[in-house]
Length: 437
Image (cartoon, rainbow, N blue to C red; front, side, top):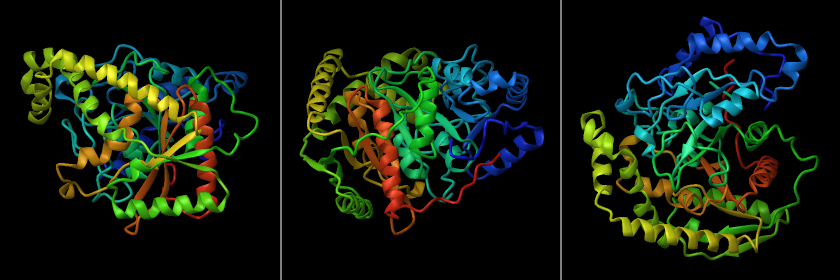
C-alpha cells in the first residue's frame, strides 16, 4: 500500500510480535482485543497458499484492524458496550468477508465510543483512547481506536463506521485519511446499527492512496485507473468555514493559496444547508431509540448513564417528526446533486475544531466536530478527510472532500491528486510514525 510491506513480506505474527504491538499501544489504548491465536492461524494459512494464489490476492498479508461494532468471525465484538459483554461474533460482516477474501489479516479489534454514539475517545468498557501524536489530546470518535491504531503504526489500515462524522473526524484529529463511501454502496450486514438512515461503514488509512487500494480490493478487485483523473473543478463550500477555529482557517487559506498558485479552477458554493441539517440529524437520531429501546428496557444498567439518557431523550420524538426529517433528507440530497452540476469536488474544513485535551472540551464539542461532516451522511454523497497541514501548535488539520453520489473511485483518485499537491507545496509534515511490523 505505502511501501511498508510487499506481498512476499507476510509477517509471522509470533507471540513476541503481538506482545510488542500491545506494548506499543500502552498509553494510547487503541486496541480492545488482540487476536493472538486467530491471526497467527490465518497468517499460516495464507503462507501455505501456492505462489500463484498469493499473487492473486490484492491484500495478501496486509494488516487491517476492525472496529468493535463490525463482526469478525469467532472474535469478541461488543460495540464498545457492556450490553454485549462476552459476545462472540459467529460470522464475518460483509465488509470483513470481502477483505478476508482479498488476503487481509485482522490482528486486532479497536476501541470505540459506546454503541458508536460519540465524537471522542471515551470508552465504556476500557481506558479512554488517546491520540498517538500527543497522548494529552483526544483522537476523535467514535472510530477512535481505529484512527489511533493507524496513526500509531500498529496496522496499515482499519475499518470504522460513520453516522455523523465518526470516521472523518478522528482521521482529522490523528492526521490520517478517513473515507466514507456513498450511502448503501457497501453492505452493512454484520454491523451494529445506530441510526440506519445515516450509518456508513468505511476506511481509515495513512493516505488516500492506501484507501484506494483497499477500495479496489473490496469492490471485486477492480484495478486502479490507468491514467490520473483530470484536474477537478473544486467548489469551495464557504458555509463550512464559518465559526471554525482561527488556526484551521489559517491552514485552509494556505491550501486555497496553493490551489490558486497551481491554477486550479475553484467555484464559490454559497450554501445554507447547515441550518437545515441540524433538525434533520436530531430527528433521525431518534432511530437509535427504535434500534436500542428493547436493550434500554431489558438491561438499563448495562448502558452508561450518559448513553441511556441520550436514548431516552430520543424516545419522545414523534414518528411524524422522523417522517418529516426523511422528506427533508431527500430534498437535501437533491440540492447536493444540483451543486455537483457546477463542480467535481466540494472542499471545506473537516471540522471546526482540532484535537483537544479531554478537559478542554465544551458542551459544543460534538457540534464542532460533526457539523461539516454530517451533511454527506444526510445526503449520502461520498466523502473523505485528508490531512492538509498543521496548526501553530502542531495539531493536524483535515480538509473534507465530497463528490457526486456513486463517484467514490473518482473521489479517491482526486484525493490522491490533492495529497500530491499538498506534498508538492510543502503544506504538510509527514508524521514520523513507522509501521509496526
